[in-house]
Length: 118
Image (cartoon, rainbow, N blue to C red):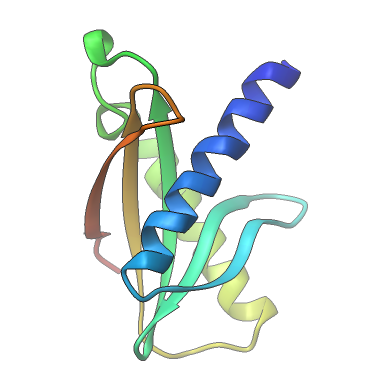
């Protein structure tokens, strides 16, 4: 299980670098409370972005995007509400998705911005 966690952390670090190169400021990594977790929370311009990161070494069984279930979307929405409440934030926000595939030393990264409407 530790290897999976380590791989996830490396994928999230690659996603953070990718977003920073595009003008995002990282606010939180692996933010969690008792009930939920967010991979990355960033700010770009006036909006806060809640970013779900999915990594697949091989896309033979689908991309990371294809592994985001309806239940996961509901959990993400609840997590964003919890983060907003914990930080007394009520401004513009959105959920973005990053799919990472291939070797993490040279990852292929795809981004879907505002992939879930509030």
